[in-house]
Length: 434
Image 1 (cartoon, rainbow, N blue to C red):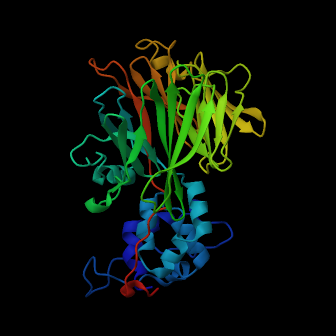
Image 2 (tube, rainbow, N blue to C red; image 1 turned 60 degrees about the horizontal axis):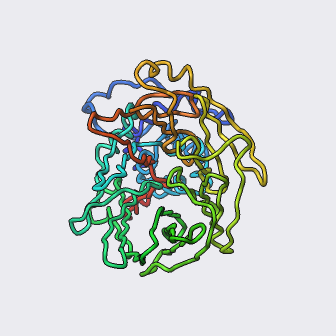
């Protein structure tokens, strides 16, 4: 218990010993009122914890109940650094699943990536973050590191990582170099990982009309899929190329090539879940099965269609196993769940009252969906020249950005989430004792 007392003050355990935070199945001894130090002992001198505190912290069940309530992954990491016993609790799989349920990953901010060339990318932290998360944002470096002096364009964010690419054009090919940035990593040499370059061949009468990078975090690292849509003059439909880069590979490989008479839209964006890529077209949703190399289609819900106005977008659950569709029409937002062969309307949100504060300044007829979170907890909307953040869970809407006078188009929004699971420290032998 010698090490436990060092975490007592900074972790705020005295605030956690309250009736509303202690499980009903356990009884906690009354904590006596602090007394002044006895004669001969200076104020602030380290003291052994009282017997009742030792009794609580020696109980593994109660200790887990205390640690699970620290609220943020950063606090969880600091708690795990106390000793191996605390680390064992904090890193346990069942404990982490419960912690995530109580404290889902938080949105720290968002990138706005311009679509014009030369494109620029800017990061905007979310306002009114708790002090613990505000300190994380303040210490992080959200500017993607340049590679060999070339401009890096953000193309996606996932689980605390930012993905960028730069392009080099040649006579009959162009080369893409992707990189994964970790803004929350404070060691500069560990912030960026350069991926092998991908070469795409071009030819007269053909062009790549649309492309998207998909990333998938697995137990042994990251896997990447790059989908390129190629139009060939005079040919019906398009060709879909999927390139794959698995963890540890040195080169990209062409995973599959499929022909389709349906044209995917540049927006809304596609999603990857359960080894399938879902893309929206004006007539149906294309499904690319990366395992069987089979192309199929799904019809959208009745009365819902995809078009260039940006009123419909695909989303997924946080575990990557369930497909959602978000649709907005006349200030009413609908969330649909794809259940087998059917669509189920799971939520409807009326935005009329929420938009009351913005109606005088911005037109609402052209309200669009720019991006949605994987957790179906937030939606980024475009209304006129403003960006609105909709908190689906708490039914709140607020303005988070307004375009400047010299901006003509907003660009793509990429939300940046707190990474999960946390990276726990390696303890020194001095902290092995409990």
